[in-house]
Image (cartoon, rainbow, N blue to C red; front, side):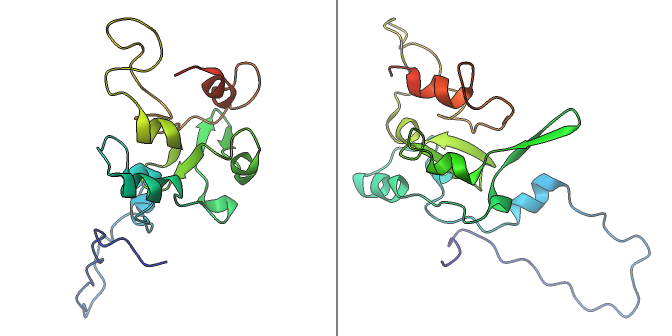
Length: 160
């Protein structure tokens, strides 16, 4: 796959005859993620945008990580929890769960592409609940994903 046209090439350092006395520290993890290639069909590129039908089709068939190292993770005390590639393949999640390298988290494809900006769910005149994780913000905490109280299972049980 070709890199996104909106990515900027990294500037090349000019040759230096002597090493710099105070080299730059290693980039923080979020800076490292920003330097990763983001594909045009990364679902994170669709968040908060009004899309044409053609663009929606592109994002329905969005970028999918090919290895576990491309999956987002979160720290919880001494433990690191990660969204697993196997989650993307599970029958109840595979048609809607998407990973964004750009946003370093997970989204619901249908909610990103078709949500009502005034709110989701509910029957109030205000439009219901303000959209949040999986809709307009990435899911970035991966400690409680499945089961009765899991974020993913709760999301699919809602009637939006």
